[in-house]
Length: 433
Image (cartoon, rainbow, N blue to C red; front, side):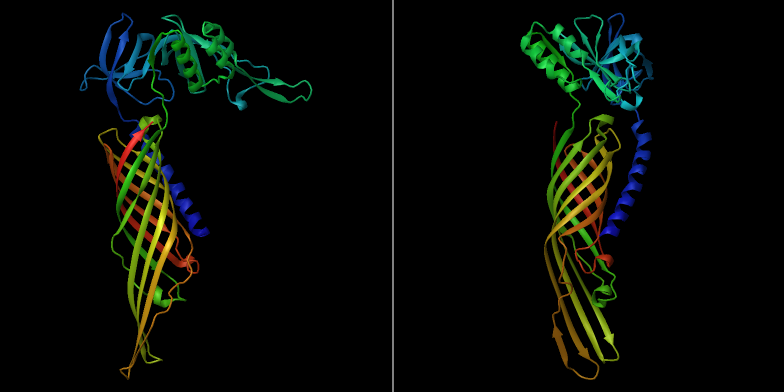
């Protein structure tokens, strides 16, 4: 199993970078969806916007007035705001920010950062009596407080290195100035102010604080969609064909038997954890699948020195529960979306039925003998397999063809016992955030 595990890890290590490289031009494809933008003259223009599923706030936006029209661009200083049919809203704003780095490696003793001014697109997280705006410039997160149409004020947090006067060691200091700022802004709601002592500088905590304040002042408005992981649960079923091969000179009755097997039924449950960034193209796919296969074969061996011929018939019936985990990538933003995935399957074998019969005939007599030896006798409970698959999704359904290459189900023959299975799986999925 160790050799097989190392080989499987190497295969996956080679496949995943290939998927990443191949996905780069696909990720750059255009994805124009319905949207709008508001000009500096307060005119609202309906259009189609190239939605790139930004992790970092965009510096410019590509748009079309009609779906078949020519593409143009606008920057933060050229419009007031824009919105997407997904519900996301961005505003073009002039802001100041403190550029103190968050990474420990980039900090220097005594350096508190430099304040800069820039014109950017801020993502709107919450609107109401108090607005919460968000910026990620590729280095770290920034949050801004705003009321009405006022200039956004940075909710400040500083990261510094200070020298401990006693030990001389550098200490990493986080100065959560935003807590004092919000306590001042939200002083009309004591219950909200009390919670701010434990608030962290992240989307979740600050969104909750602003929502609570707006509810307290009875002035609630827009709330941007949370970019959380999406969980897609599914029921799946399908068929599989399994190939079994023994390459052990110690057991010629198995080594020379051409095993064959018919289609077997598989049923199970699936959980696909979809990552919100990059247009939900990447996900971690997991499934629990009840599997079975039956392999049968015959082999005839003539022993001239003994003047006899042995006729072998061997049968294996194996049942297992397979836990599969794979990294999945979907290629297109279309109703029918092809995908590929790669990962590992761990098959827990809970039942093995084996049978072998040997009928011996002799060259110079009609006498025959018959016996039923045990072909293997010792089995391992866990089989590791490399899993590679490709399929398509359409609405709530997915259809996949997959190949699994396992090590063995026998302890004694593990180094030379090979199992390969091809599966055709149909799944019905239901997603929930």
